[in-house]
Length: 215
Image (cartoon, rainbow, N blue to C red; front, side, top):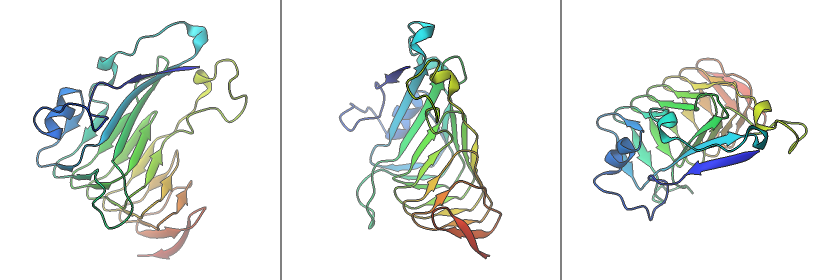
């Protein structure tokens, strides 16, 4: 298996930005809604993964255009200013072989602080969601569970969409895994690992996360 990365857009702090961060993202195929503000520079990655048996491939940026969307009036915190430990927001769209590039859709009025989102298929964040720092969301394990390094490894990668419902709160350091739907208004406790869907208005904590309260 081989992986190709595109590093010629605002993914590094030394990349020479012209204009605002939003303008730079738009110029490189990331949709940004009106009124969204950025503190620091988020890291955005477009990656193509393919099996070496399929022969050489070139990463085409047009395959990723529009794959990442940040809605209106969002707050994207990529500095080290928060009171809690944090890091830059990281948004990664992965294209496996001939499949479509993974989509990341962030709704309106969302707060992202040091969040890492990896999409092989589709990660959707509803309106008004608030994230604490160092949250990880991924819709794929990124590799098969068996026969790592074996034949057709990329072709055997599986994924399942993730959705975080409107008005949910996700605490510091939580991890949300593939196929999970977080219900509207739900609360995910700090450091929780969520591998099963969460009902609307539920509070979940722990590893694995369990419902402890209904709001």
